[in-house]
Length: 363
Image (cartoon, rainbow, N blue to C red; front, side, top):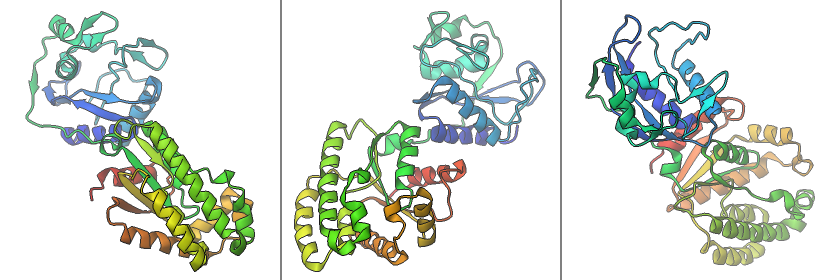
């Protein structure tokens, strides 16, 4: 129903965002309705690479159908027109039979409108039940329904995994950078590099007496960040793995500018410049901006005792440090996202908004 091609394209974008990377997209085929009287149908097949289980994929595609206007009534088994219909045909070479899902799809071998687009993108794939290739399954199909390839071409969405190898997510204290990194890591099966701030013995002392403990704190953070990034990034192939970190080593210099005296900063900068040359640079540097009011609210909610006395003017100095850094470091591919009015933890739509901005960004 509705704009058939648009519905298909929107489904592809949602699948790419919520399920996994779309590797292949078939042509769009037009067929008469099957099993009932209706306008013609548009059909296509896609190949998706996902780390989700088959049942998790099913839950995602059912929600996508609903988001695109389909009202699926499970008790109604009759055929009818709908805005979108998404079926799992095959899942690797698995055979799945349970109350909510049967894979391979039990009717796929009877339907040319399934097998023709499937054979276009997966002709050599073996059907695990009949042990024949999809190409042979199509030859054996007795369905005589006319199927016509349309001239409409769907655009295959580009996944974060294809576009970037290494993303660094930054932000002020309480901006949500670690939370967002973990969400992206879960959804895109990314290798996570998370800052080990909780292990720093100087941190509680610093918030109690900033002047006294600023230099040992910043030096210990610099050494730890350098070692972690050097070790962790060395373990991953930056051209084969998708890596997300919740910090970039330049944050050491930003905090040092705010915390250290002029003499201390000069010494610190000499050490930093030596280490900075050796660190891999991210393909995309994402800065999450939140206003001070939201930051303080987030800091209060997460309940770390040593953070509860952070002043708004300190947060503003940190933000200005980041702002100056992003203006001067022109070689970094930098994206600033204002998350002051977004709740990407509890609102999936807000999270998807952020993912879309990251995916659509092009310097």
